[in-house]
Image (cartoon, rainbow, N blue to C red):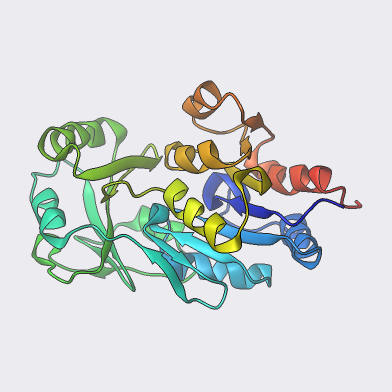
Length: 268
C-alpha cells in the first residue's frame, strides 16, 4: 500500500471542469483516497470562502491554501498560516492609473472587494455564491489584505504589470492565475510557501506530496512537490520549465482523478 501522502490540487482548469464544477469521478476518487488515509488539500487563487464550498461538495476534510498562498486553513477552518500584503503598499499599488477596461479587486480575510461590478468575474463564482462588494479600493485601510487582483485584457494587464514591476520590484510577489487575471501578494507569498508550511505541519517530506496545477500561480507549488503533475491544457511555461513534472490529460476529461486512480491503484 502507498504510504500516507499529501495530495494537493489547484481548482480552475485543473480539478474543476469547464463549467467550474467537480465531476462525480473526481468526488469519488478523493473520497476513496481520504478513506485510505491520505491527506487532501485544495490550493487556489480563489478566496477561502469560495474554496470551502468545493470542499463541502467533496465531503472530505481537506486543508485549504487560498489567495495564492496568503492563507492556509485546517479542515476545521482554523488558520494555520497567513502572510498579508501591507495595507499602505496595497494603497500605493491600487492608486496607479488603470488601463482601459481593467478592474481592480481586493481579497481580504473575509471579503471580496471590487471597484465596479464585473459580470465575467461574477459568473466565475456563480457555483459557490461568493460575491463581491463595491468599494473605493485605494481608500481601503484595514490590515487584512491577502491580494490585489486586476482583471482585464492581457495586453492591458501587461501595461499595468510593467508599471507595478518598475515601482514595487522586490516588495511584492506578482503572478497570473489566468491570462486575464494579474495578482499581487506580499513579498514571497505563493502556493509553494504555504505548501511547505503544510508539509511541516503534517511531518511529511516533499517526496510524499502529489501536486496538480495548470498556470503560473502553480509554479512554486509544483516545483516543491516531489510528484508534480501539469495539465495538458496548462500554460506552456509549466511543461517547459518543470522537467520533473508529469504532463497528464485535460482538465475537462477528469485527468486529475484518472491520474490519481492510476497512481494509487484504485479500482475502476
